[in-house]
Image 1 (tube, rainbow, N blue to C red):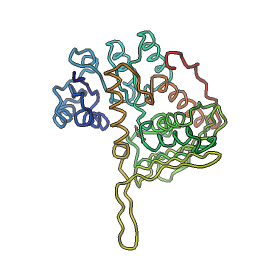
Image 2 (tube, helix red, strand yellow):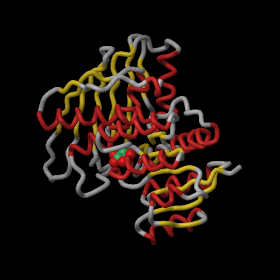
Image 3 (cartoon, protein in one colour):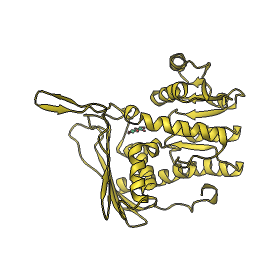
Length: 334
Ligand code: ISE
């Protein structure tokens, strides 16, 4: 039986998800593309052969010819639309962040627990990226010894929106690192400090965070949303016996004029194409079998990322280290 998927939001990420559903997910079909901007929905629907377009997300979620939903609309809609999916009894792959506040994440978790089953997969696709998978393996098989530190760099060419702020570097960009680092290390955060450099041109300057884990590891994260030169994500995990670092990912290298050149992607869609594909395939299996994918992020992970982001924003604003405190993990998410 084909799983009929609705994609809500036809912006950059919605278009990308529509493409993956249409071209990379055997067993799924792109049923409807929904966006408040009808022309935008139509463009994506036509590009990837969707059956239909719509402008009312809640109406789409309730449709009997929609089996599962991908939410890729603006951040503030993520939690309400995930709740609508739970009410309709439909599995949802919700783009990160799950919500703009930890309180909203709790509401999603409560709804899921009340419904008695998992509905929500959060789109922290980095977990499916081969480099982080290999880092986890290097810990699990003993190659690294005890992990001590993880260094992370997250650089965008430019901010996605004109009203992007230093706080959004923490609440919109850094959650990728918050999530994948705790996934790799298998631990939680105890505290966070945040600092921001100064730029001369008024653009959002880099934010650097230092996190302490409950197991005594140190994690640093640079978020530079205006790096200008390319989309560049780096990570190095340092253990007591060895260290493992992510390579620059490029299919080719150009050697010419006494120099060598490896290109950068303009944004995350190319660099993480394979991770998105694996993530969305895992989501399809979740819809088909009801079994939550082993390495995917759940509502709980969405909540943890939001708690850490809130503490990070406070640390930046108040200029001092903040403790990270969260509820105990519900048995439901074990
Ligand atoms: C964006 O929302 C993403 O998810 C990207 O992966 C990240 O690099 C970017 O900074 C975010 O704004």
